[in-house]
Image (cartoon, rainbow, N blue to C red; front, side, top):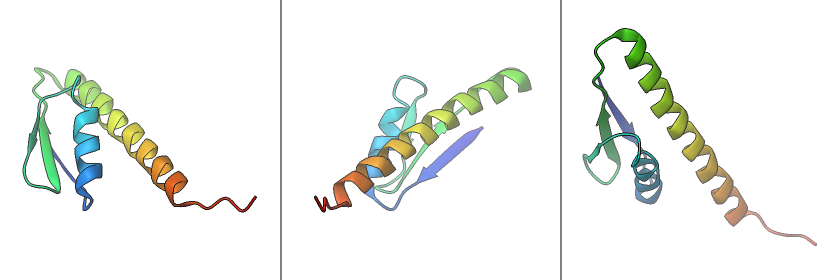
Length: 77
């Protein structure tokens, strides 16, 4: 199974790709896309590995959103 991730922002794409460094081998497709492969013998293991990778990407994406929001907010105090 191949999963391809696309982000318009190169920096965010790279951050998401690097968030999988300890989980899976990734391959850069271009400045906006990367992919990773999952190879498991049975469906139960494939599902578990898929869920782990996707949850990691969701967590990394949420962190990027918080950082972006914090960087763009202004303090009115």
